[in-house]
Length: 337
Image (tube, rainbow, N blue to C red; front, side, top):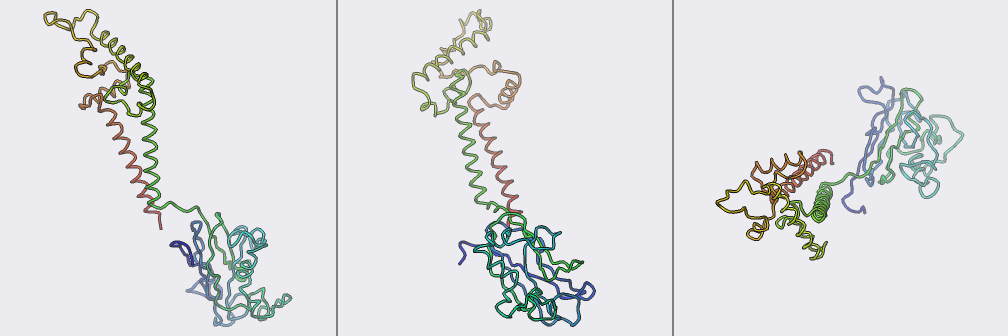
């Protein structure tokens, strides 16, 4: 009764009794796989089958013609002595308490329930020599074990580790669960919304602090300013913008109105233009520093007016966010199980 659609990994043992010459073309004992990487929460089914019918007098440990495999944790692949139960991290983190029985099961394969073990026996062919797992059955079922402790865990079999080229060791790595595609998509959408909201608020604050900017123009002004500032403040900022634009126009056209034909009368003021069209736009030639001016010139050359620039910037940011989302989803699709 596992919650949700669990991922279950089957963990086995391969090989047969004998040295590399005797087992050819097969192999000596080994865990399969020797390098296993799973996400936290994955269930691993530890099970394997030995044999009681190997050829006689083959190199190996324990009762002749048999092969057995247990699993204990070691500090590193260079070690040959199991770590203490209190330091165990793979099968349980409570080896001295509730996890004691599972460690016993994987270490001794339940042979204490089948034979009367003799701890003093060192005879490889003695059925009661439980140190060599002689009393265990050929098949071992360790059942499902959930991998909850992240980190790198090294394991070995005590019987098939003869301090020579015969070494049955493996590594099981437990990593943080990877994000699913729908989780990444939700995260990206939320990120885009948050970034867009911050940009919008930043534009509103900038427009309020600098009413002479194009962001404060009536057709560009962020609507949220209605809630950020009182009508009196908005009106005062509009007056500041009106005065600024008048100054800019006078500076551009000159005090004498030389750019206007005298026979046609004086040039209309910015206030007259505003009353007729509602537009208080500042000539783009007068904007800021050279870098910003070049950007504005580029917008103008592309036929983009002052009111369209914010839309273009937002459109480019949205396209960039969608590209990042697609790229991340593609990578996740290649690495997901």
